View 1 (cartoon, protein in one colour):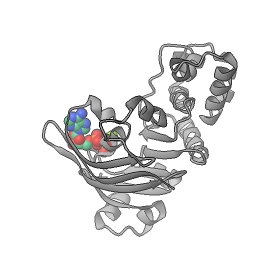
View 2 (cartoon, helix red, strand yellow):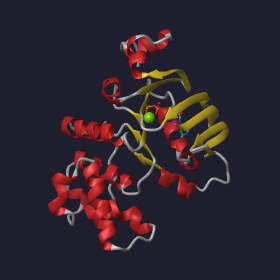
View 3 (cartoon, rainbow, N blue to C red):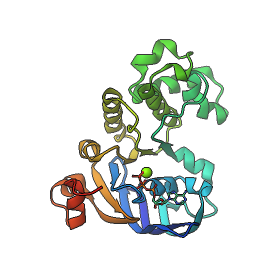
View 4 (cartoon, rainbow, N blue to C red):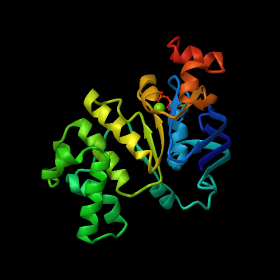
Length: 251
Ligand SMILES: Nc1ncnc2c1ncn2[C@@H]1O[C@H](COP(=O)(O)OP(=O)(O)OP(=O)(O)O)[C@@H](O)[C@H]1O
Ligand SMILES: [Mg+2]
């Protein structure tokens, strides 16, 4: 089923640069889509648009459609709180709250009014297991989130998103600050999570896209040059620029 449908989507920042030009994509549920391309291509801008984080940035103009579950999230009537529950986002730098591990994972549920300890306990364990972190922290859930490593903190941030049971998970270079072991755990976690969720990631590098992506969109200077199954992008892309990029000739 098509989960995200992007039609003629353009975005211009108020400094005048047209940062996304006429993007068209269809993303199926239970897939991992990787957004690849050189710096400044628009990957982060596109990820932020999907849960309306651009509302906070200097955006001068938006046009086109960005449907999630058939609803255009650009519609001014969109309930942004609800949207951000459906569409969770994880950034490059782990940003845990200055609270315990347990409180970090249960924060969103508690903010939404959940008080039942058994419900919170279960959600915390499930989310930490899904984020491949449970085995490392189950006996110290009351410790500060700052007492664990950066790689563990990033998995904690993923667990925090998962505890809210979103439908779509966006990740913007989630492993760029991490060691190889945490990176591998996050990749394993994403491959398991796609059974339940729809994942869109700006990967740390092309190799990561090759390891985990079903589909790949190549962003270049605000345009999607090519969008195709990963295997096609990496072996027989139809655009010369895609081939040059995946073969490491620029970017
Ligand atoms: N808040 C902002 N205000 C103005 N321009 C912005 C803003 N954020 C990004 N841009 C511009 O939009 C374009 C796309 O940037 P974006 O960060 O989306 O690219 P990216 O593909 O994520 O790059 P990278 O690989 O470096 O993360 C760039 O030209 C950038 O300078
Ligand atoms: Mg970026």
